[in-house]
Every structure is written in C-alpha cells, then in structure tokens.
Image (cartoon, rainbow, N blue to C red):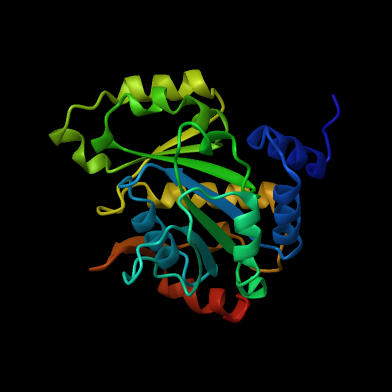
Length: 260
C-alpha cells in the first residue's frame, strides 16, 4: 500500500475542515500559509471562555511562539486580549473577507500562530470558512450537556472540541458521557479535550494538539516545534495563568527562537 505525500494529506484534511470554500477564504489561507502563520479559529457561544483560553495560550507559549489574535466585536474600552498583536473587527459575525482585511494590519512576519475568536451562530457560523487551517468548537459545562447536539453543524466542521470549565462538573448537572456521544454522532473524527482555563487543566494537551496540527497543516517558518519545547518542561501555576517552564532548556529555546 502506498502512502500519499504529506502535501496531499494536508490538502485532504483542509477539505475535510472546510466544506464550503469561498474565494476570500482561499486567498486568506494562502496569504497566511505563505507567511508561515498557522491559523486556528475558536468558535463558541458568549461566555464559553474563549478570551481566557486565548490569554492562557498566549502566556503558555510566550517563550516559543508569537501569537496574534483576530477578535470580533471586542467590548470597547476593556482590555481583554493580552496578545501583543491584536486586530479588532467591529462585527459579531466574522467572514473571510473581514479576516483578510484584519490581517492586513498585523505584522505576519512576527506571528507564528494566529487565533481567530468568533461567536457561534447556529444558522451561519457553522459552515463559514474564515480562512483558518483548523477550526475549534468551544463549549462550557455551565451551558448544559445538550449544546453539542444543538451545535452539530459546528462540530461537523471542526477538528477539535474543547469542553471548558470542567472544574464546575461537581457543582452542575452535566452528563459528560452524553456530551461526548453527541460529539461523536456529529463528527466521529473530532477530538474532545476537557479543559479548565481558571484551573489550567488540560492546557498541556491543548498545546500539544496545536503543535500536531501545525506540523501537519502549516508551512514551516523556521522556528522551533512546540514538541521541542516540552523536553524537560513542567506545568507551574502563577497568579494570572499557568505556564510551561523549564529553566534547564529555556535558554537554549530562546536562542533558537525567532526574535520578537
């Protein structure tokens, strides 16, 4: 049996993630790929914890990857996203054209990972291609275990499902098995990771998933793989976030990193 070249496998994966391609999305994805920027969209309902997750991701990867963010409908006057490179879009319903215009204001040569934060709309968002290379559906325990069934179209077009606020499970009625079963019915190939950004549970697994997808779908930029960074690292908690640190290897990693 022959194995398809990596480029063909990557194309097949993108076709699976983006069932309704449009010219703007194709252009956006090509621009980001040629710039060596791996792009992931985080789609979920308001209050599911996307902004906190983004901030935790930025802090966790601060020594190995430069993270940029595209944020839709940001609350004016409030400092929400801690990323150095942020593009604000005055819209509560992103499309690929708005993302392309947003990245025009970003220094793509100084960004390794771009996170697109968008709000889920069951009638539209589920099948809109934003030009990302991978889509992540974000849910939270407090919203109820029926939300995966209600958002089946979103899950069908996502490669990962994040179940946030898992630390609340002892305090709310939430059937985890039913949630996983609904995800499997919508998309049997979707990975599910249970996380808690306040308690920093599951963050290491989330970052490893990002790295695996980046290596599969993205054009190398010359920086270090996240996997290299995990050698000898441990998870430590600070007052604001949990970061993966390793004094023995941190200096070597910084020497190989692209200057900020």
